Image 1 (cartoon, rainbow, N blue to C red):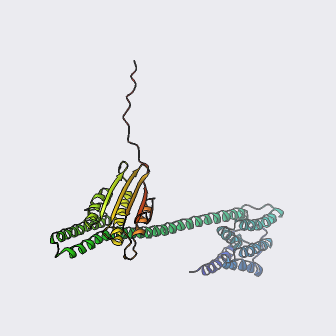
Image 2 (cartoon, helix red, strand yellow; image 1 turned 90 degrees about the vertical axis):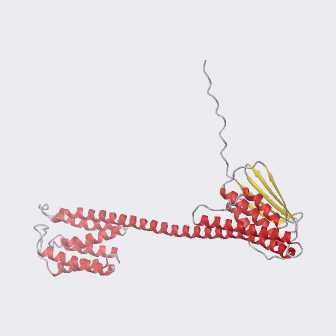
Image 3 (cartoon, rainbow, N blue to C red; image 1 turned 180 degrees about the vertical axis):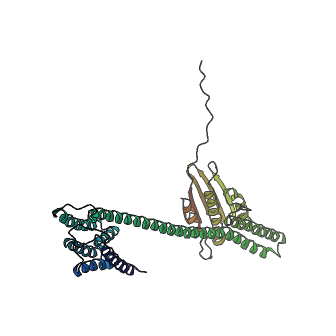
Amino acid sequence: MNSRKVDALVAVGAFTAIMAGTYANLSWTGPGERPLDPLGMTLICVSSLSLAWRRASPLATGIVAVACGIVYYSAHYPGAFAAEPALAAIYTLASLGRRKAAIWLAAALAFPVYGLMALAEEDPPAGNAMTLLSGWLVAMVVVGEMVRSRRAYLRAVEQRAEEAERTREEAALRRAGEERLWIAQELHDSLTHSISVVNVQVAVAMELLERDPSRARDALAAIKDSGREAMSELRATLGVLRQTEPEGVEAGLAGLPRLVSRAEGTGLRVSYAVTGTPYALPPEVDRAAYRIVQEALTNVLRHAGAACSVAVTVGYDPAGIMLRVENDGEAGTAGPGMGLIGMRERAVAVGGSLTAGPGEEGFVVRAELPVPERPEPPGPERPAPVRA
């Protein structure tokens, strides 16, 4: 049921209750009461029916109800029930947040009524229901304010709940996007490198199959090793996705010698050097460094071919590590890929940077990956001084 129908029922119920209470003499306003006549009934009817608009036009409803109440009691009509529409209108104004209007209407009804009682020849007798009017007026303002505060609190709770739900959904979508990007990067870096090595070895095997079967056999063995390592890395990636312990090869700088050896098996002349004092890296930095070098070697195979030299340098510094992969080959005819973009994304993801471009002889990839400050190892305990 909508609010207009509810307010209409409230208006009809108020009129019925006022008429029943007044004719049943359930309240007494003093010895000066006069019998209820058509004018009094009209005042009750107008003030009651105005409640049908108490939420659509609360101030207008309050003015009409209070005005009818003032005229009603000024004419000494009987019963305190005629004040009910005014009380309901004052409560509605307070509950809707219009506190000042509610207070002004309560004062507008109270002052004339109590002024008439003060100017009467006799003091209000005991049992006069109108002496309680001020208390009811204050109660309507207070209850209306409490209801308004309660509604505001519930709205705030609902808004916070909706905002939390929306935030959770956005966070879930963001995490899903990050996981998809991570999966794509892992599969791209590991599989494209292995496939590039396999392609080179297949070409070598096909060329040497009849002329030099022993070397062709070595190339086929290298293809087998590359496939096995690709499967190991794929199983490790799937193990992470399943939140289980990864099986097979873990990507990290500790695996660079193996990576360099596999690249040399394709015909590349690779030199590998480490500068500075190696130390344990955070897992995310370790993995990013390995993948950047792996992708750089893959790009050499794709774009420059196997007949070139590559220099891989890993420099350790207290603030981070520096990677440099430089080749002296010439750009081939392979189409553009996502290798450079993926390397740069990996570097940025751990707070680092990556540059790639032509060098003095060939192409250079240079990455700087910061390492969070590591706690100093505890020094030897100094013995306590001995007192003589």
